[in-house]
Length: 131
Image (cartoon, rainbow, N blue to C red; front, side, top):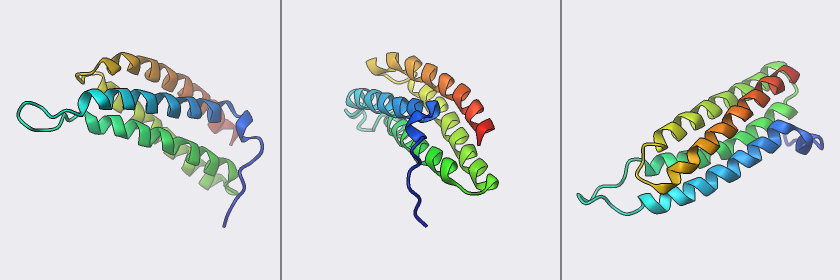
């Protein structure tokens, strides 16, 4: 069953903040990945490089879940998708904290992303009440 994207979606503050988070996490990940790509002196990879990809994947998954929650016909499905948004937000926050310990100049931008995630959480609480 295909649903069309609701016309009110671009007006939702949570939707716009999710777009900002996706854009920001992508830029930070690209910056950090460049620093973490070279192999360690012992020939191993830097363990933090995977977290940089995770923040992009998780932030990218926020938008589809918000859309699914908005178009879901039943209360239970709406809240299931909203719970997924909560889990993704928590994972994003944890991965940002993990990346702050990496050996990259890009880690200086992670507090900005965490600040945006805090704002997103506030919007999310209100949004969940309106579903």
